[in-house]
Structures are given as C-alpha cells and as structure tokens.
Length: 349
Image (cartoon, rainbow, N blue to C red; front, side, top):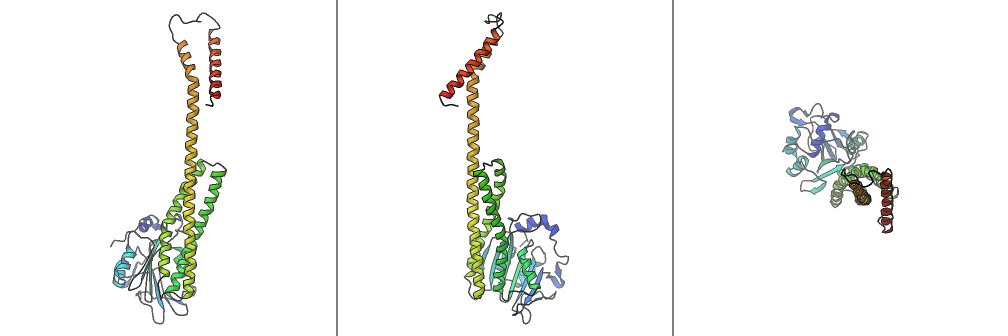
C-alpha cells in the first residue's frame, strides 16, 4: 500500500523543517525509529540498541515502545512482517480519523493532536497511529507531535510509564492538555468577538475575524468528537489499565467531553454572529436602496421640467425675459420642498 496520507501531503510542503533521519534504515532493512525504549517494572526506560528493532521487549522489560516516522520507505515491509494486517492498514491508511479497535492480537488506536509545528495552523490536527500488543507499543506519525516528544523526554529522564496502559493514559493526557489550550483560547476569542459585534456594532472587521474562527471550531470538532468516542471505548477495555490509569483516563475523557461541548457552543455562537452580520448587511442594503428610490422620486419631476425647458425649439416661453432662468430655478426649489413635505407627511422619509 503506498504511503500517502493527508498529513503526508501537507508534510511534503513542510518537510524542510522536519527532515527524515539521515539513515532511514539500519542494516538488513531494519527501519530506523525516531525513538525506541524498553521499560522496566521500576519505570526505567532503556534505549533499544540499534539493530534490535524487534516487536518484543528486551530481557527484564515490561514493554517496548517503538516510534516511527511513517515517511520512511523501508517501514512498510517491517510493519507487514511483524504486525497483524488490520493495524498495518491503519498505520498506512490515507484517510484516518480517531478510533479505537480492540482485536484478538491487541489494540489499534488512532488519535489526533493539535499542530504546534512552526509556521503551521494549530487546527490542522496531526494523526498519531498506535498498535498496542502484548509487551509492545508501536506508534507512527507523519509530522512531529509535541505530546509524543514530551513522552520521549520523560522516558529519557527516567519517568517512564510502568505499563502500556499507563503509557496510553499519560499520552492521552498530554494530547488533551495541548488541545485544551487552544479550545479555551477559541472560546475566549468568541466571547470577545460576540461583545464587539453585538454590543459595539463592529461590522466588516468582525466579519474578517469570524471566518477563520468558524473554520477552526469546525476542524477541531471534526476530530475531537470521534476522539472522545475512541477514549470512551478505550476505557471499556478490561485488563489493560490499573485503577489509577482508569481514574486518569476518566479525567481526560471529562476534559475532552467539555472541550467538544465548548467547541459546539462556540461553533453555534459564531454561526449566530454570522447570521446577525448578514441581517445587518441586508438591512443596510435595503435602507440604501430605499434612500436612492426616494431621491429618484424627488428628482424625477425636476428632471422632467429641466428636460422640457431645455429643448432647443422655437416658441419656448421666457427666452426674451431676463428673469426666466431665476424663476424656473426657484420654481424647481419650491417643487422639491413640496415633494419633501409630502414624503415626510406620508412617512416615506
């Protein structure tokens, strides 16, 4: 299956700041992971020696974590050699959404995280694909995910999760924490914009801010809703999590649910603001059209008389009278005033 993905297509334009490692594969076709650790029962993470990239923990380790850049051309054969077909397809699937699929051999998990890479939009969420088997976690991404980078740093500092379940609980907490920062900011920006538009009457400037905010709310909600469902299904798995892990996952699920609800509320409020601005614009156009119609109605008879007395034919009255032009001009002013009074009397002005 070709390694094509919406993330990857977007990555190709940003690959300059996220290079594939210089040595993409180790000898004998073994792919080079971004990081690889064996975790002991005490929570100590031991780097896996190069060339020992096998899907099984080392001696004395509880589990092994292998994290790959999915752009590596030599990775697909390795995945097909060691992972079941369904998680391999999930790793390489060109269209991904958050999901949790328990299988006989293990657990397949697709997640999304906000994009914190420099020069990119935060709401262009990055996919993270995971396979959790007995004593094994295999993860892959196309672009850098800072939550995973934080997990790697903690392991290097000796703070590794003691089990695969603890790893998933901490990873989901890291992803949710970073996403929550942006959903809270979006909600605050929605409050400020609503005040500007509804109370202060901001028009075009508010419309310019409204579009990007609506797109952000829609894009975040698109992935966080399924991610909440995936986390709910993950919590239902037996034998993977300790009581403490489940408590942490419930807290993460609660935060994620609140974020989804806030995004839905922000999306609806932004849509209401858009409707409000549209109504204002239509009302303004209606008023402008009405004013133009009234002005045309006032000047229509004046135009008739100026056209009538402007014809260049013999017999025009007043051509020999020196006060004819002044009298005609004064008559038109009086006619315009009379028309204005009539329009005001009929409440047309």
